Amino acid sequence: MVEKAYNPFEMAQKQFDTVADMLELDTATRELLRNPLREYHVSIPVRMDDGSVRVFRGFRVQHNDALGPGKGGIRFHPMETIDTVRALAMWMTWKCAVVDIPLGGAKGGVVCDPHNLSMREQEQVCRGYIRQMANIMGPLIDVPAPDVMTTPQHMLWMLDEYEKIHQGKHPGFITGKPVGMGGSKGRTEATGYGLIFTVREALKDMNIRPEDTIASVQGFGNVAQYAIQLYHQIGGKVICVSCWDQEDQTAYAFRKVDGIDFEGLLKITDRFGGIDKKKAEEQGYEILPGDEWLTQEVDILMPCALENAITSENVDRISDKVKIVAEGANGPTTPEADKVLKERGIFMIPDFLANAGGVTCSYFEQVQSNMNYYWERDEVLGKLDVKMTSAFIAVNELAKKRKLYMRDAAYMISIGRVARACRDRGWV
Image (cartoon, one colour):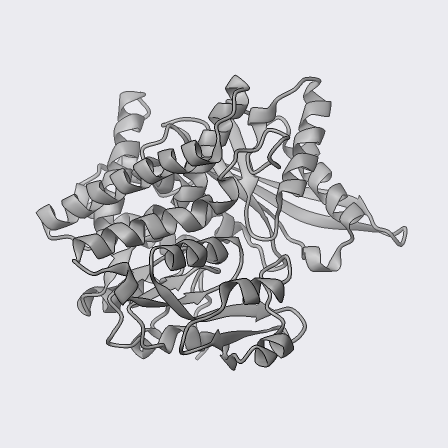
């Protein structure tokens, strides 16, 4: 019997249905919120460096914009699917709502692998994507941003193409731009730092000092790197990180029981977050299978890579010592695994709260770009800390008051806010 393939959108809908029952939402509201308002499928023809033409598939899903313009990244990934984009768009709706910023949820993607494309070919993919989407995105409609394997350079090419089409300067069209070209200081650090702001508040609530904790992290890309950096600054110690090896097409975990050397690892890491295995061994790291990050005897697990990382097949391998799972990635825990974590009493900081620092800072960038006035880094990160801390406290207080799992409490707040906005607008 063949096991059913993982479908992130079905997972997102299942999470929504559970909370919709708790909120006693009416049928019309459920139907409106469990599916996207709009979605777009496009073909992007690109002339390659060898003179041939290759056609790439692209998507944009706008899940809900009752609270404000859509907001969500554009990812380049060879395994991208429309259901992944639908799920991520839905999670973006809840993410914007839980941190109480006036934006809706959207997401985009192109089926491609930047590793195998030249910079010119990547530029053509970016410009081709915007040519197809220019009339359904914009500063007041839907504001994209970087995501998996897209960078500030990609965002700048997209902005340039959008401005050519619309014949004007529209820096608020896209976020994640380079600083100096309409980007916000602090944006690069925002998701990882925001994750640690919530971890810090969780530890405070549990009366545990950060310096008495150790952690294991899945991923070593942007989110994981800045999360590790700030976690070290507040006194914590990371003993294991895992990442994907492009050459071997498999994942490896890099462990040092006395704690990783963050700066040393950075020096042997490529721009996609891949660590050089041979050089890591030379630095004294134990090289383990990629899923071994999950089995470490640590206080905190931080899945900061892709979705579907903690499943019913591996959740029982999590150590009894683990007190907190802080989801830096989107959808890293399946509903079946989530039930096990809940039963075991592990404190969950759900993805759309834990990693909302990125979209919060994207909102700050959008505000700065639209008013053409930019803040200093400390001001940006200070505002981010306030937003993330306030959101965590609100969710934690509701969870305690109603004796709810943190994920359920976060969903109740976010879905409740979006449902209210839909009703107030007269949509349902």
